[in-house]
Image (tube, rainbow, N blue to C red; front, side, top):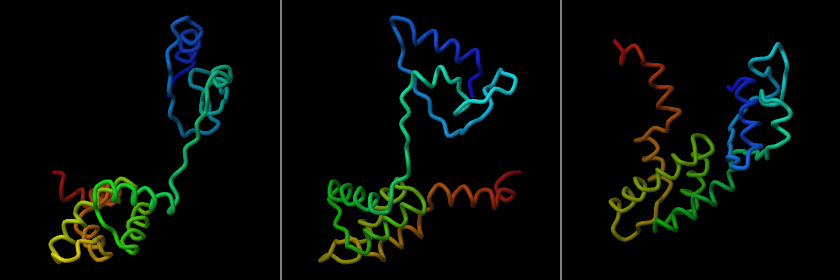
Length: 153
């Protein structure tokens, strides 16, 4: 995190005629501002700098929003999804991440195409098999931590 001197420099830069666009990403609450003797501020930033910025709060997608995003992406890619598979992909997105759920569209559609030549609609079983074959980033990291002695010498 930045200290008080860095924030002073940014304040001066924001007052200049060629003011830069500065983007901060933080999840800190009220905490001590570095370089001070116990002075606290929201996000560890001085209050005079906070007065000059626009705060954009972000929050995770809901299940309904994920299902909607996945259906749009599937339509864009030309993947036909059953209602059950779409609901399962939404649940996987909530559990793991939206990116992982979207990445499962391709292997699930390949499995659906191999299963039968008549119906290429992705069914729940195709999504389950794809989820079984591949790991999301969180599961992969947990597996590496659990078996780190087997991988590292």
